[in-house]
Length: 103
Image (cartoon, rainbow, N blue to C red; front, side, top):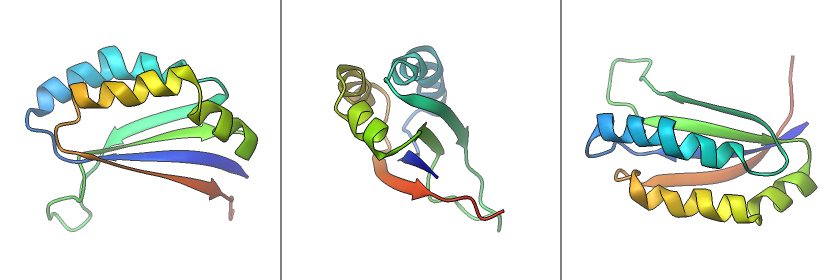
């Protein structure tokens, strides 16, 4: 089991500016969050060729609930969250999840 913070980004006003800021500024901020064991992100596409519900999804993984809580309350996470207003013009939806492998 791992714990995850999922971040769903709405379609930004300027996708090129979003991509540039996300890769140059936001990723380094997020990677500094203590306890982070894995960090993935990617742009989304609809499986039925319709408009996808969001532009991109990021997943920040932690070994356990304690690490998740410590990471979420860290100064590095506060700085990462504050940066959202600098590029996430399409809005952001976040949630946590305890993930279990079913393989």
